Length: 104
Image 1 (cartoon, rainbow, N blue to C red):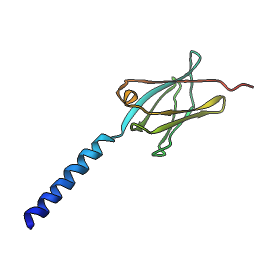
Image 2 (image 1 turned 135 degrees about the vertical axis):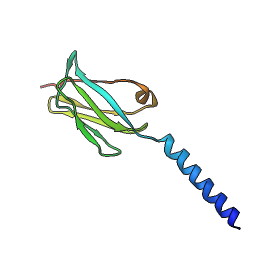
Image 3 (image 1 turned 30 degrees about the vertical axis):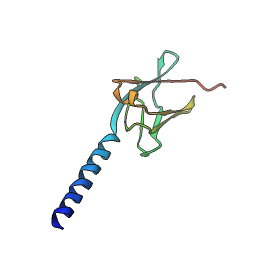
Image 4 (image 1 turned 90 degrees about the horizontal axis):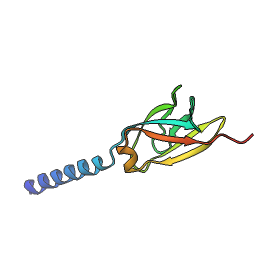
């Protein structure tokens, strides 16, 4: 009986570890531009985790996300943009986000 409980506990532990590692979050580095100009002050929110950041003067940002998360990009002068994170995005060294200026 004790051996069965030990094996069951071991199996549950191994299963939890393997499932947890397939959905690991990673810090994503990105750069936002409009036309050929980098954009400062774009708000970036991970809709899943509610983590938030903003782009710097070079349009650069970093945020923690995992595959399937949706990032929302918004700024006063730009059209809002949503992007679902893919496995290719996680492998990429730099995520490039092209935004479009709002029509006045």
